[in-house]
Length: 511
Image (tube, rainbow, N blue to C red):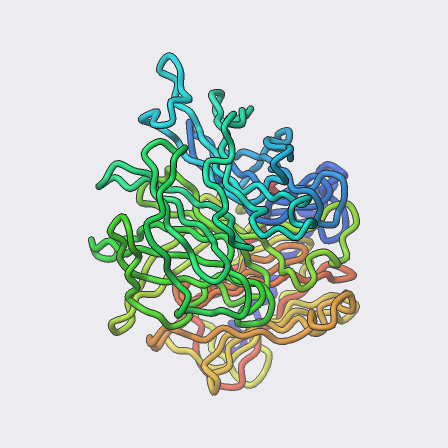
């Protein structure tokens, strides 16, 4: 059996060397602006300067729109604009000019966008279907004067498929009642009552508002003061449904900063019911959509029918302004399909990379029925030279580790600790870590599955790794900043168990 494994190893090394050669050719053909150190090759990142939360995500006329918090004058957070990009496949992105600029009412903070098919807003003329953006305006002058009502909700509309926007002349449409944090409106259509529902972050809870025309809003209810995690202010909520065996379950996402499971920023979720006025939770314990330190402010695209596609900001407010990139800062996660799985009487969200990612699959190498031992069971000496996807599955799970390493000794370690029943990512020796005291460390996610076997997908980029285990029940996202690209993968286990399949995909750059 060992001889067979070694023979497969030799074949895999040869394949990996070919992959490396092709990767170098591919990278040399990329625009210089996307060839900088630590620049993501399979994740969306801005051309330059600062980016944070995804905003206004809407699917319309065969295009996915991504707006985002953008400060075009610095790599440090500043007066917020809405940047803009579009994609036809959720993988390749086209940059567009800034969509929304600050004005006398304030900066353009986070928000959402909808397709107003019934022209409830009246913005559409001659049969045109308007796109309507709903966003927070943050009045920094009022804040400096000591006022507390410096955040209000405004709208803008587009009649050319989201390429240009006109702000509503009577903004704001929802004025602050006297709350310090009153922001991040996420709007959805509630078909049963033919009305719009706005889910708004209001300090330590969310507040639901309704409207018939996107202009006049009525408060319906509040949720969350006594439940969930409250280590920091609540932000960037999202309300939608997921189906489980033909049953509709309502989901409420709420980001929190600080107070995440591995410190800093993170996004929690609640399952429940919604009757057009109130959210009634099925659970009040704290659950996280991603346990890693680098998935924050994530929301879903509007107008994708029953499919719910999630995207998060791949950073953490603990160190986002200090990460060692020079011309741009931060990226988005891989877009993810959300689903539900039931364990006992509880519903849990699952996350998986969108299937559209297969368009960037380049080369593939696969091993099957590998029997592990106390020794190293696989070593891929070929250069990674950039993005890859690693997939493995087994009928049994024991403690194991996967190490991505470079020729200068830096490494990321991913694995499973059976005694603790946790998956983990260790970036202690991952490269540049001194820019923030708490950056280096080992982060964990509990294994939620109760099945004997397991599966895992790792999505690897130049400066990030995303872990999806057990059909996406346990998820972690981490960024890192190596001084040279990782060039080898080693897999080890302290106990014998058979890996049914282990597949390595080399991925093409999206730029």
